[in-house]
Length: 274
Ligand code: 2HA
Ligand code: ZN
Image (cartoon, rainbow, N blue to C red):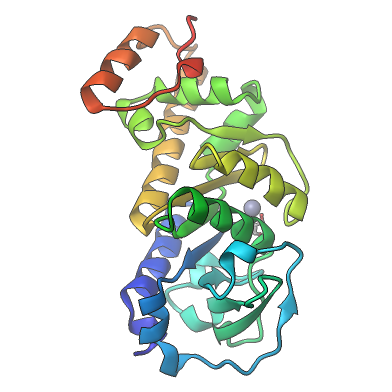
């Protein structure tokens, strides 16, 4: 089977294109990775070329040894994913020692995996472990409103989580564990990857101040839906702040009541009295 005919490659392309249409991927902004299931690798084996040399990884990815990932290309445009898929993304294989990768499909124009490969692999490793293998998607996007909020709200997990949860019930339902925020850091480094994946031990969404967000999900739908929910809430919050601030707000007890009805485990540290 050809990679481009698979459900997972189609889901990958659709997600990138959806993000582009949302306005989250100016120029070469943002990146996406998907960890293939063993059966998915087997199904496309005839379409793979295992001839390229290995490139050392800047991070140790022992938990991902032998895994295969679809990854967007460094400097590639999400805008081009539907038109030039095999040039815009590729499939990489992680070595058995977890210390190198090689391209086995795609990136046909000679491209390299995303500049945020270190962050993607570290986050993939954490989420693979935490979810017992269920989590396969890591997504990085540049949605305008959540980035704008990182200029005006105090950079605290408790504040971002609670302020966004208040905007609509969907928020506490899609990120009940809360969201993590990290200060501005140089993109593309293993340092930002390391801090992000430490937060991913606890959360499925992490905000990079004045830059963008990272989300994790078991499926393309869940990672995209989470990003979309965070950004929609951020857009509403920006409007509310611009209109003079919140006046009618659900209380901490309202969240506890909702948690009971929907079986949510909302940490008490986000339910402080205001
Ligand atoms: O240019 O988004 O963080 C791709 C990025 C880097
Ligand atoms: Zn970015």
